[in-house]
Image 1: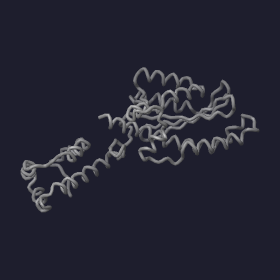
Image 2 (image 1 turned 90 degrees about the vertical axis):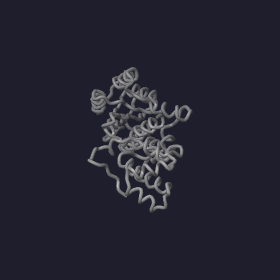
Image 3 (image 1 turned 180 degrees about the vertical axis):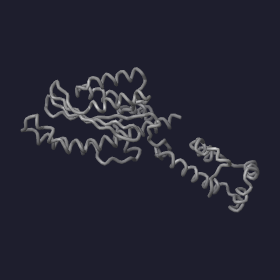
Image 4 (image 1 turned 60 degrees about the vertical axis):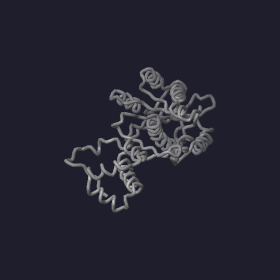
Length: 279
């Protein structure tokens, strides 16, 4: 099978292949279709006649070609028994997703470890924040600067459960980031993917992991694995001064970062799925 365009007009890359796939599936060929095929491409018409003039075979072949093109440009997702094609994550989309987890290391939550990940469609930025009473340390300013730079470049921020994210930032003492998020909400520069899927499903309080697994995507670690590692860290630091606590959270940090890498990428892709469904 060959697909080409005369004079290399560049139309293959510009065509909306989603719409073409829908048209091929819905189209019911008639006598006029055969006449048009013969006029446009006599060789293709002869090939079709060689197949016994069967439109079902021709349509199946056309679908396979279109799906191949879509898979070169997009990611195929099965959502509610429907095949959906979404763009591959890319900086060109001007989207970035953010998520974080916080781990209180004492009962009063005076000492908290926070881990944050930002995904821009192609690469991840990871930062940690360590709150000790009223003091916050860590490399979180690196992610903060990256976020601000992306916003200046016209990116839109994606989060899952904006209220949870803002509350966690406050609890970690990251007031600038919490205030920045509030400002982005007013400017319409942040989208809550949780609300997008609550609208699609008609349900409230959908856990992110359930939505991810419902689509059929896999996670290397689940929240249960993170909780087990967190409890291990707590059991080790219980008898130690808090100045030494961080050294016993190494495995917790590693697993949580991997977990957030996957979640931020899925938050990004979930928004693209929701956008496709709304069309």
